[in-house]
Length: 535
Image (cartoon, rainbow, N blue to C red; front, side):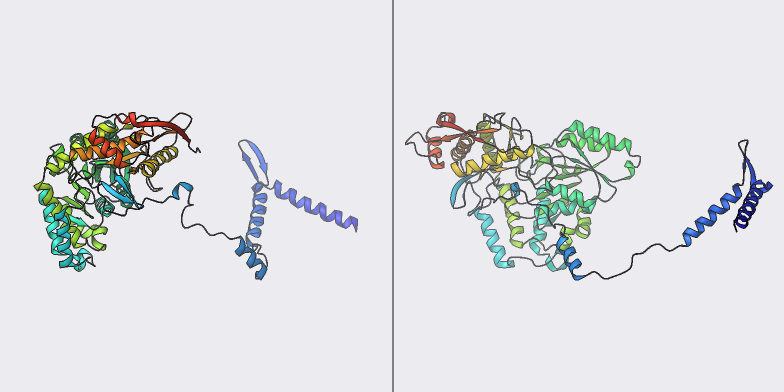
């Protein structure tokens, strides 16, 4: 038995030796003799085919038990539909209970109002109220339909014609909401692949319109014309297809996030040099800049024809609601078919369109409104100039007077918290209503935070009355003197000199009127500090 097995092994070895020694099984590789490679390769192929022919292993199928199903359901956590709510998001905005005039009622208390964009004081103007009343009686409250589907009313056409005539453009188009003007007009012209060069300080409405356009967005430093020139140069040189693409420059006339005014003359020069189109948002400049309130183009004496697209919200100086876009007939006609906010939204309520027409009429009939507003801005800037710890960064002619911390706490979150503490303090203790540049989680603007003072009612206030309001605001802000390096907010408690009662707006107003040269710092006393939270 053993000998038979040995004979079989010997026979097998002989066959293997013969296979390796066969002429067809020998090969020379780089001068080295290798034998039997064909046999080995054939054996490997057999093994590979054998493995590929085998079925993959599958565990036996069996249904989950009820207990296993319950355990899986208990362990499953659905993804949240919204981001987590942080502590700084949980805040209650002040509730306005009256018209937004120089004096307003917030949470049941009368306050001095520096938060409303009622630049010209037209919100309670008799002619606007009469115009709205007549339109309500004639047309009702709403239009109940988009412009292209039985939502166009004659007053809409009249308003569009009035805006175009006022600004000196061929045509204009109305939108039912101020922000939807930017949401819709920008994507109507800027498409995927287009290049848009935009200021980093633009407000969220423009940011969202750019996001919806899916264009290639390139930011330049805020209101920095050298940065804009370098950006345009880089875009046109590095992109070989740039000359074949649509290219835009997007800026604000008066920046909502800083109060600065765009240098339009320099922008136009760069636009013409590098062959870009310009989209200008005049929301905070219509009714404010220029000798007759026609905005930034009149302010710089630039022909409006050099601006390709002009947009504006009407909720500021015109004291109504909605927005408009104005420009050439081709620019306007394109939006009537391609702008989502115009095509699909219910049209502007007729009484608001009527109010816009009347507001423009009042502005043209009373150019002194603009002169009075500028005097008020000068008075306000002069009063806020020497505040310790805060500095004015806005343009002297801007209706938005923007205060910023001279020394940052080190993080935007702490800066905003500090400024909100100041605003809450002056509202609660001193009855002065101001707002901070608080931004949502969607806002991509990275400019420093600040406190916005917005020009108040210039129609019903004389210079003495406005001086009194400024004295009240400056006095309350002067209480918040400076930010120490340790993160302490130095505050002061103020008392009236007459009877040592807590300060109130009425006392300051009367003191300011009786003693216009009185230094407000002489009325401050008893400093104390409140620690701020840090990350």
